[in-house]
Image 1 (spheres, rainbow, N blue to C red):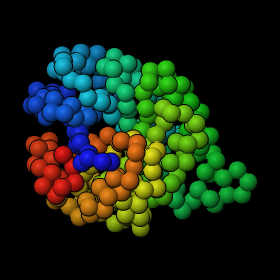
Image 2: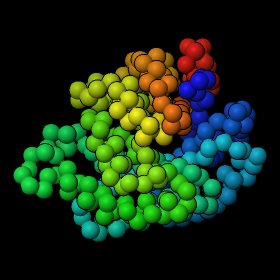
Image 3: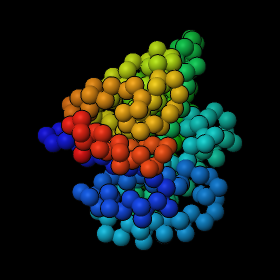
Length: 274
């Protein structure tokens, strides 16, 4: 990156009026957080989306959503659950089509347990079966994403190995499947399970990386603290990001939305982002 990267934000649509000025400042990337809620997807999501469209009039930045994830394993081996997981992600893409969103975050299927057990079989390994299950569920979702021009970005959750979900993304052989790094999740895995540090997750993703959730944490839990309040080494994170040409969306995903502006200032004052 030749200039400092531009920070985006993740907020629910009800907060769009409060952050409209930030969004129109260089058209920061936006991730809407309403549509991971399965109850909403089964209900009046179009009313929420239409309200968001009104609030976003004049906005020309890159728009995405966080897809559904609660209780949804994109490699679920149960055929009944597989159909449900596929359906929920297709509902998320319906939202993208309605909004004109070009990116949807989905959750990695890899767990801490998987790290120690996926290679513990002869012949067809658990790795192979997990990947087959994921394709059984997500192939139709990927085809729909391709039709819509939406990129699905697979976010690390419990991932201890930075490479597994990258290889899973590659296995779809589609420009509509890429990788996300959540800095707090990576820092949790580093501090609590012995995973590499956050900057390693970014470097190992390389130009597959199209999305980053920026949050600070302590290496113990998924804190979503303001930037600067945890123990993530941000200089190393942004040094790794500077090596990329994929221009990932850098999304501040904070629990306290009132801390978004302060986190932007912190990174600006550190000379890392704008």
